[in-house]
Length: 87
Image (cartoon, rainbow, N blue to C red):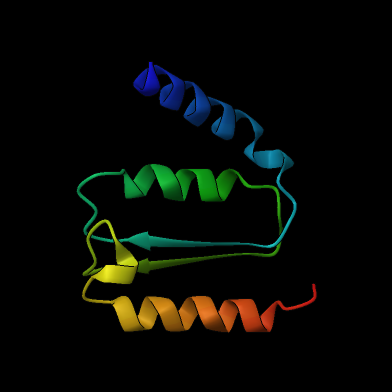
């Protein structure tokens, strides 16, 4: 089912994260109650890219674009996209 498929996908991502060499941005909720922020940070560390950025919004829950840090999260995403346009 869906849950088993998601678990399999998460295992595959962890196993193959080192193969990711593209620029990447992780924006994570610091007060996450649905997903595991620490696991996401672990995956971030496994990513093979040397051009990667991690931002944690300490006061945000699961939906960072619809939460307390909404303005900052959207600003950070726009800035990242503008900064990396064409690369």
